[in-house]
Image 1 (cartoon, rainbow, N blue to C red):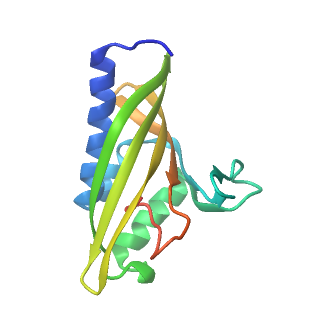
Image 2: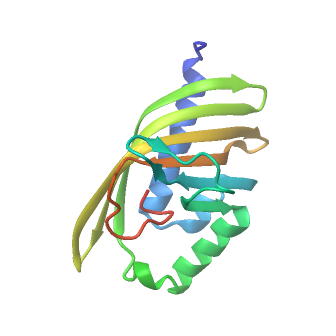
Length: 166
């Protein structure tokens, strides 16, 4: 592990906190603007007691979306066609322990921990937590998310899992 400068770490933290802000405020356009055109969002499934699936092409995933899939998911949420999530819950994302793991040229590998509390009037609140792994890319407009892997640390999934509550 190489030591990284505080400026890069602060820029990375700002990006991750901005993502959480957009999700909590249902600012889908702002959230999508943080992702590259070739972005992938993946939430692998738990595999055994403490492992996760490693290949989204051959193993089960909670979520696996390329950029077109992410945009389609946002469209269904905005249009009200996401029936399992109606009414849409209010969320509070906490992103902590942000660490730059590696930085080479335009690619930055980042790890973080997260917790999301979801509130719907018709159900008790749900709290989820886990680990984030990001692949960030330096672009002309600044850092952008090219890859996001979400590990949900829960052996029982209660309620729907969606892009906004993990």
